[in-house]
Length: 269
Image 1 (cartoon, rainbow, N blue to C red):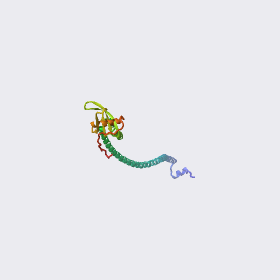
Image 2 (cartoon, rainbow, N blue to C red):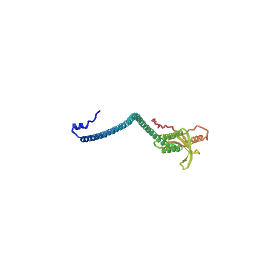
Image 3 (tube, one colour):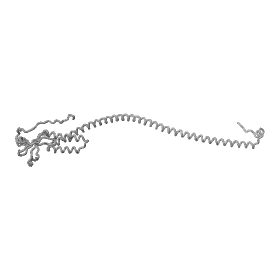
Image 4 (spheres, one colour):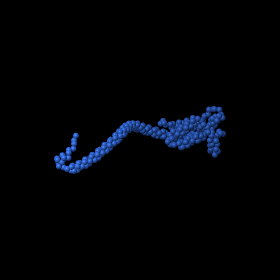
């Protein structure tokens, strides 16, 4: 146990008075108080810094966790995008090949279309020629087909082909049958009579007036049917007409005629 020395000791040793010692003691206490305040302030700053550091560390840990999750999500998204890009590249290659195939098909269709357009134009020209050379009995029916062709669009190949097929079918039917028609005919003396015309398809025809006084042989020409008077065959021609009209029983008749062959069929179709 430390005890304070008696005052006589201070007086004897140093010769310093008690008053002087008290003054020194008070001065030391002031110095210790300033150091304590500085230490306390420093301690508070240190505690505050530690607190802030802890807060920042905790905040950083939280942000780090969020960032790690986002990085993982981005990596997963990047992987999906990479896979999608690969799929798109594959699909793009397939589509490119399909486009090339379509282009080739389109070129082939255009070539085929040009071929059929040329053929249809040839058939239309042939149809117009036959229409002009057809007898009036058939020409009136072909006029309807011609009107339909004029209305149809030039690019409507199917529609135009159907019209031509129907027209040529009708022409073929007429060409394979014997048909009678009654038309007015003006004679050389100015009289106009109604004559019976018996068509043997599109090859030729025979005409006669009802009284059997004048007869004709008809042949197709460039601008229609040509009439040639046949005084030497009035009787047989009249008999043919009456047999067709079932006014006479069937009989064998000899009429003028000449067999000709007109081969204008192309083998390109």
